[in-house]
Image 1 (cartoon, rainbow, N blue to C red):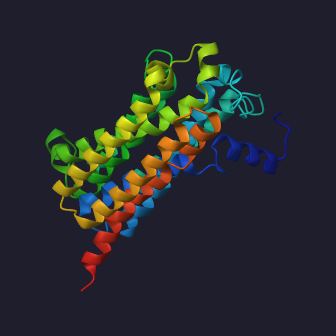
Image 2: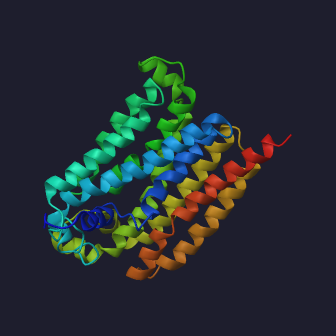
Length: 305
């Protein structure tokens, strides 16, 4: 295993971090960029866009390393995951964790170019990300833990925009991250519950056999209705909070496009077929893009003299 040539090892590392499947990091990226624009009231500057885009990709990649190590025994019994590099023994546990640590440190180096409140929040984000892979052993809906992990870019984005010049401390953090930012995190959590329940529906039969806990199993025959309720809660709360933060027609246009996609996803998942559920999950990043595009478009129009 360790005698492979360097290009072959790199190929395995890219497989480990799902480099050929960008949907995972796009699901984190769009709400984070939306939060940057909302916090800044418009374009936040190229430095923050670059930091959060690269940081999102790096942390999602690091999360894949930790997740695959934590789930390696379970993944052997799931059709979709049985050939992952750690699961099949092509990459050792130590190597996978070392790669994950390097990626996380690279992301942290980017965070160090921001400000103390953002740096402080990055530690909480890391803790939640590391905890998620183990949540499915103890929590009936581990997707909620994932929702917090996948939404933490929102308060970090607010801190990066509004925390300039602030020192580290509770008062500074409260000033940099006002309550609407935390409310946006909760709103985004509902979206994560929607798309990750679709994802869990794909593996439901395998997960039942091996004793994994997921929202698809917990919700049972109410899974499809719950997914649509999660979409509705996300879009309704996101709209209200976006309006509160000063966005209008662009936000509403993006929400309308996202709602149309959510309605289409109902058609994909209503029969609970693996292919349809997996397709709905994989295409969810377009829903997040629609919300971001509406906010960014409105900001761009406003800036035209």
